[in-house]
Structures are given as structure tokens and as C-alpha cells.
Length: 210
Image 1 (cartoon, rainbow, N blue to C red):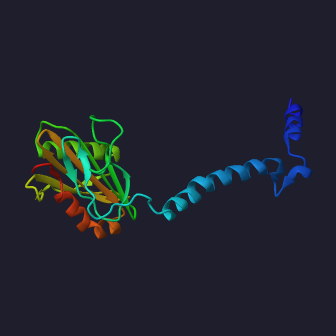
Image 2 (cartoon, rainbow, N blue to C red):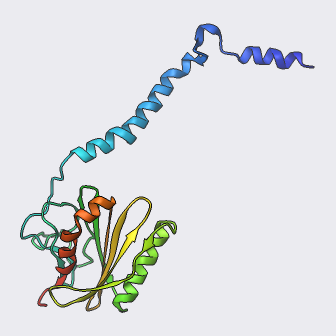
């Protein structure tokens, strides 16, 4: 009863002329292709992305639109504007909501979002914190909320965040019926190095006429 099994194994064994260090040489091209694809996406693409400077950098005097209701923020100079509108831009469609603002600099990202909000600033910060903790799978540590006031006199709350991969902060400001959430994250050293530009950006949140 064992003979068919032995014969079957012999038939399945790779002939010696197709072996190279015990590996079937006929599979090498596919292995090379798989390795090349891996190297492309894991090594080459991130390296090229890091090497290319942002074509749309913030300049002195730039003011970004946080919400269509006239809520604005002044970004740090020299950061890459990946998403968002300047107040001098002409959007394709009138009305609607302003797109989220996404800024990048040396591994640090600043995301500013807005939505209609009828609750308190503390509730808004708690909501943003809960979402961030859920997205991090529970590995995100939160600091105690701290008060701050914008140059326009708007009260806000900010708290530090820390995870195994990145540090940052969460901030919340309520402007009339609009809630503004700011999320900052990046490598700990870079986050500390950009703390002052980020602070100035937070305190620049205002509304037209305020």
C-alpha cells in the first residue's frame, strides 16, 4: 500500500536540472517579481515621497478656511498644504462645507476639521478624544485638558496625546454653532520641535468680524 505514495513523491520531486541550492529554479522569476513589488512599495515609494518637496507650501500672509461660516486659521509658514482652501482661493462649488485642512512638515501632520456643533467645548474635545482612542485601538494615552484662549478671545481646550508610534495633541474650539477639531501627530522629537508654530496656529483660530 506504500508503493503508490513513494512513487507519487518521486514524481513530485523537482528534477535535479531544475534545482538550485534545493530551490526550484522555475519559480525564481516569480520570486524576483514579488521581491521587486515589495521593494517598490515598501522602500522606493516612501523614499521618493520624502525626497520630493511639497509643491504647495504655506507662505506669509496665508489664511486657511476652516468653515464656510467664516472661521479661519493662520498656518505655520513653510508647511506643505496637502488639503484645504486659502481664503483667497475660489472653490469650484459655492456653499457646502469647507474641506479638512491637512498640513505636513518633517513627519508632523496637522489636521483641522469642522462641523456643526451645539454642545460645549469640553464635549467636543471628549468626542474627538474618544474617536482617536478608538482608532488607535486603545493604545493612545491622553493628558489632562488644558484651557487656552485664541487671539480673537475664543476659549479652547487642548490635551496631549501619546502612543507607541507618535505623540501629538487634540484641541477643540467652538465658534458659534461650529465645532473646530485640531489633531497633531508625529514623531516625538519633531512634535516637540514644532510646538511653538502649532501653538500660534491654535491661537489664530477666529471668525470673520471677531
